[in-house]
Length: 291
Image (cartoon, rainbow, N blue to C red; front, side):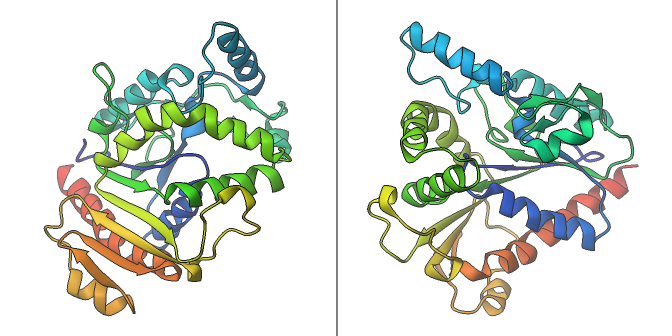
């Protein structure tokens, strides 16, 4: 962790909705005139798209049917921890971009599914903001989470997470339902071993719970809307959280435990603004006093 160069990380699995959370943080950064260095978790995958397919095939031939981006072997987690450590200490580090589609790839004159060359972090940023799979990762050798000042988990209940992934991958990426289902099944061991434990290290978790039937996510025609869901917000340390204020500002919300707030799904964006703005401004205040 760092006083001079704070790091915020949003962690959640593919299809969990971390991008929506990232956009909420960007609104805060823009409003408060905070210059954030954005780091996308996909940029720390070990393999580009073509190489990943080849490695998955090679792993299957060895009998490993569960090789996935959720696991450490398919990611540069040591390099991610090194980036966080370097940034926290000096405001520097090495980053790159993963080019998801033709629109992202065209300015770089590269193919989609490839990485840009490594580059230095631009000097002068106020903080670093990471969004991806492994912001709270830790094992016996690598501890990414230890370098992060504010850790946020985004964790829809599993059926909702699957619905969101099925719809995104089929409609936006053109995959068949069978292909997406195969991906879900292949990733499950790594999800249990390497994704779930991260949510015990986060400072705040947002878990969206639908209020409509999602018993069989593989036949759902639509993703439950925000108005068809509630959001469970858990604070690892509730000390300093002004719950009476949050309850007064978020209509139809209530507390189920001393550290747990439940709000209507449509209020999630507002809740993030109310919760994280003072946390971010505190980090900025500490930063200003450390120079």
